[in-house]
Amino acid sequence: RLAQAGEHIRNEGLAARLTPADLVLLTGRDPDRVALAADEVARATAGGARVVGRVLDVGDAAAIGALAAELGPVDVVVSNAAARLDPAVSQAAQADAFVAVANGGTHAVLRAFAPALRPGGRLVVVASSLGTLGHLDPRLRHRFDGVTLDEVEKAVADWLDAVHDGSATG
Image (cartoon, rainbow, N blue to C red; front, side):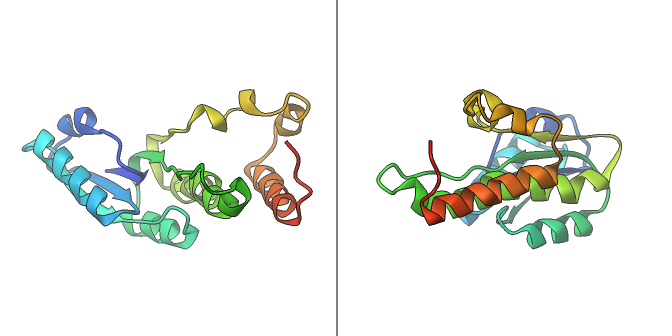
């Protein structure tokens, strides 16, 4: 089975190599985009995998966990969650929603689906270059050497607190 968490990305090539016993699950927050993506992939796979679209908010860790439990063992999971920032709105006003998807959604997918991977399975996280240490102030990079996912989540939570109390810099 193939599960995709996050917004639509093109999986036609992979899906076309699958059989009718395989499932390609495309998820996203926008019902119209999910339906359109599932339709496009289903047409491209004609006779291949079974393609299903489902609305899923990757900012909802409980929903991701429930989906992982429902699906059971999976072979490939592609996490491609994104949250848009509106340049007309302050970053502070958008920080919670952005972090809930970009960080929280990715972490929830990792936590829920990594244990569900079959032997040889793959969990692929697609992220922008902003998700790399290269965009982080060099003075802070050492804080992320060898850290756990829990420690990254704590650092992000601390940063959100600083954004809200006005003490965040940079």
